[in-house]
Length: 331
Image (tube, rainbow, N blue to C red; front, top):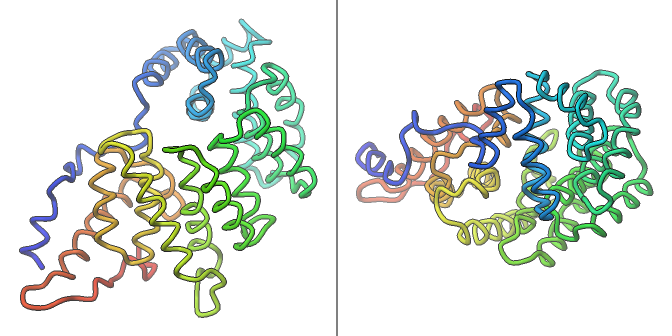
């Protein structure tokens, strides 16, 4: 096993080269400028995504900028003061306040107070689907009915039928952990993946449904409602999607991190190692922050564990089971 393990480092960056949630080349300068207290770069970046209809990038950038504003908000306060009706600032504000509300024990009550901010963001640019993704998150946190959810979903897909962020929010609402079931979650994910555009991250929705199932309270057991074949099919679809992107590409990094987690839970060690090689240095907080307070450390620890499992399955003169502690709950 030791002999094989040393050879399995090929294609994997050194631990010190792996970084968490690395921003892309467009977002990084905006974050650096915000760190200096300057909002102009962020405003220009979001305006460009809105004008070009780059909804996927816009969603990612809004989320990251709102997260940054939570810890260092002076630049954002200045932006809001300078341009109170800027649709981009309104959207960041809505995302920021929804994120804050989620962490409060009085979540539903606080989130209801945020409703006018989401309305203002949606009115800022009527063609923008991202405020409707925020609205879908908001609906989940305020215990909104299925009727309300369906109305918001219709508004979202009318603006962008294949928007990944809106699909993820809808999937969460329909999960067994919230207001749906494992069956609803998988059915929605598989239909969306079938209708997705080539190369669209929407094709990864079934593996997100698998993650929701595998991490549900109590976890899958002998009375599991989702057959193993359905989980494997979700993983296979995500593997096919991952192959459409180059290795070390930051765009699908979160999907590859998520897929790796699911493959580990399914004890598909060689497939997991393949994804780790494709992921390269791009660790993402999700899904590791769902199981550890140290997502980067968890990612690196799991990477070592996967290598050991693959090596254990290739002993000299025989074959191993490839099963081990990574699915036992010890990590």
